Amino acid sequence: MGLIPLALLLMVFVLPPSAEYEHSTNRKILPILKHSDSSRYAVVFDAGSSGSRVHVFCFDHDLALLPVGNGTDVEFFALVKPGLSAYADDPQAAAESLVPLLEEAERAVPKASRPETPVRVGATAGLRSLEGNKSEKILQAVRDLLRDRSTLKSEADGVSILKGFQEGSFMWPVGNLGKKYSDPVGIVDLGGGSVQMAYTISQENAANAPQKPDGQDISICKGTNSEGK
Image 1 (cartoon, one colour):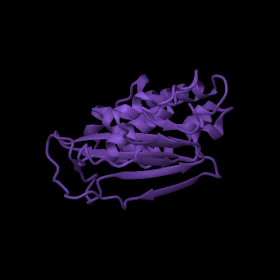
Image 2 (image 1 turned 180 degrees about the vertical axis):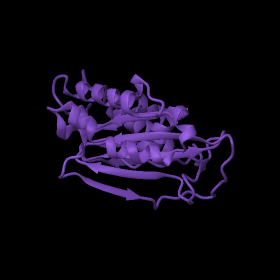
Image 3 (image 1 turned 90 degrees about the vertical axis):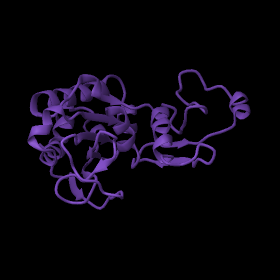
């Protein structure tokens, strides 16, 4: 879900033995700007079906991305596997799986900035697929983790499940940043448990589009989601 972290950024203004851990610093956006006293940070967790990822961004008052730390990379990124849905019957273990990512994210943010740095957790298809209240129990465990063990600025509504059409709706403006509205590109997000497509159509075609089935969040005007959730 490569576009999800940036999409979530727009909204901001004990690890098991089988888990895998990676750290990547190869994503860059030029030009690189210098830090100032007005620099701000944001931490975004992308809780996907196949794994959980954390992204740390730094930006200025104009939301231009700045290097994270002393290097030139404008994003800190790390991941763990499996995803939260693998702990469907153990919400506490699900939350604990995020601890290594949380610790890495906090180290990437200057200590003085942590209390004012918002943290967001966006879960996708993995948690959407769980039955009953299992997803909500996991979300609550994550909220408790951030409240009790994090120095970042967390809020209860900052931990949630994104609906499929939201993923598509958020991805479209991110994928078309800097492009003319008259010449946009379509976005296809091939995730571990769902597929989202976002693209523009004419007003006439939108008016003639079929109605979505009852109980499903498929919307041709807002986005298309293969799983209908």
